[in-house]
Length: 128
Image (tube, rainbow, N blue to C red; front, side, top):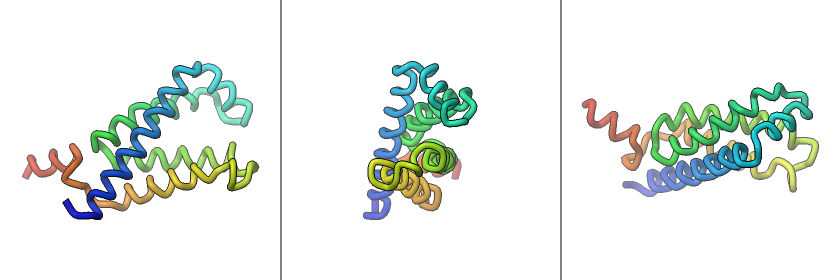
């Protein structure tokens, strides 16, 4: 494994853990409360369920390296939504600084090649 591949694995796993925990927290905190928060921002409440599901299941998928590019696109969309609906008015510090970093990691994973330390790669190799 090259240094770039190792770095990619680290970013993928950290992003996966981060979003798994965020998704889990949404369900544990009461997804109905999160839906209410979404509605207070002018976002349909049902999107809270979709976001939480993507974060929870997508986080696991990223940790394992399954569907990394698709999950990363979905996370990038979630981050753009969070920045422009909830965080932009708060400013960079104490606002959208973390969201920008998570967005950047997502974009990197969209552009990066598969690494040998992912199930996507193992499946692709086994098909050859």
